[in-house]
Length: 315
Image (cartoon, rainbow, N blue to C red; front, side, top):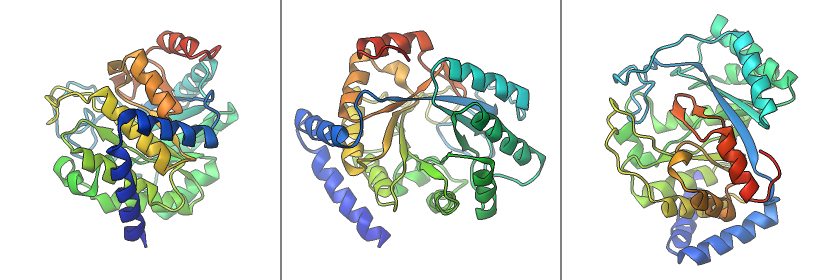
């Protein structure tokens, strides 16, 4: 059944992607307006709660222990640090607070227990809580749910076929199994991918088709532009054409009408005009703050200007 859904969505995605750009964007915008308030763009904040030293060998990641990127390794942060960051994010207009730990998988014990307390801190401030912690068991997913977690981020990154070219320490099916555990626990799914790792347009469409074939579909799909980092195998990767991103946003919007499509890492490489076009094509979520885990992001002041230009009063 999953394979049939995948094939159906891939066929549709390929047809859409081959349309003239303006026709594709027009269709996507109609779908967007039918399912979302186009003035509503969700603002999220992302904090690295445990940085560096990850045993995975993801070719794009500066936090991998396999590469020398000059990143300073940091242990799990304190509850008070999280409380301060959550209050700050809320004051800047964030609606969802996301926390990322550079772990391959969750291990039961004091650190996981502290993360559960962090989730409670986020919820006490009235924000949605999201974490990305690596692979999960069903029991761990249930504990996250009981702590109040709203969403779990676990990206597919790319297509099944291209995946093995960028990651060797975890399989594509490992990722799908984690998403299944999250869904079974009643937590919403945040899962997307990275553009610019050397993948083909077809790989990108296969990733979207895989996500669209999940039943139910993910509530959030972040689309990241690779930020090349010296020391990683993808340090010299070529940049993505912004219009290729817009095309993918439009296809994602049509394939997954109810999903939040998030402009994530790499927004600094996009002009205001490219971001506006992506919003028109169906993107309706961003990350606020000048850092995403370890990578740079537009400042809150820069985003305030962007939203002012969009006719929104505040970030």
